Image (cartoon, rainbow, N blue to C red; front, side):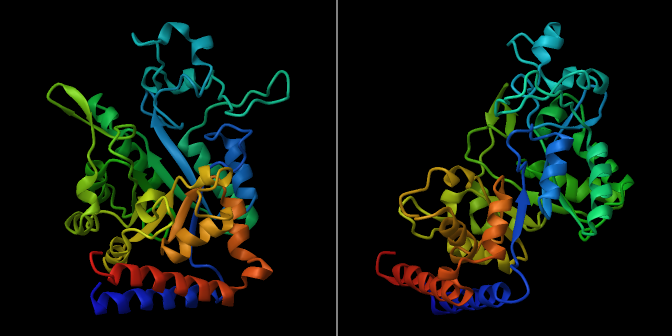
Length: 368
């Protein structure tokens, strides 16, 4: 590593120390549903998540047959609802049920299913809600709690809607504008796994709606689970490899404010730091970096970690990420707000810098 890069990383460590020993922890925690007994995309789950102290909530957005923006975790709703029971005739040839085949009125006849079985019999019916209803609830809770609540709205499978001549992104932006979310300080962040759609939002749709919200670029392995492209007569997985280059990061900075990375992009299976230059470059470009999908470690820790708290510290402070997208937001906020006595802020900061120096020395060794 060149000397100036070494100095930059040490300077970054000093900034971390300064921000974490002051009035609060300068980290972003984006809360998915924190009550696993309730369906994720439901008003009750949203209300509980906010009441438990979440400062930023995560909403997954899909679109109905009559162009209503709905809160749902996926565009295929077999496992999310009782659609097969209520509308068996709406199954497609592959046997699945798609939200685009249901109007809002039809969707409101369905019940959301919880991923965790309930002991109540019969289980209470929890219905499907719209983005506008969710924003109205958030506004009421903001007024009652006396604090601002940030929102990430993830546009699900925009490529699928565009293929069906539907524009979910435009619909989401119109709703944001009507509800007073107009600029980067308003608290609404638009997210997607689709880089091309996010570029269209930034370069076209924002100008047309006369708003300018923050944008979050989500990423995944090149599996096609979240984003695909129709090429040579078939749907192919989107390839994110370009985004992990210095040139790609520079290009992304033109349309996005935050980028979400997988845990294994920043920390190896043995606990060594990876791609520190990528985070440094992102910060230089004015972007924030958040990490998603560490929740699985809450119950099954990787071999290099002794506790979930130490793992959170590793990503947020040693690796230098700016935040987490998590279902463990209440637990993580507890870590940040009340460090344990054996891990006082002074000792924590010392450990953080020591770990940074240790990894920097490894990178300076020959053949590294």
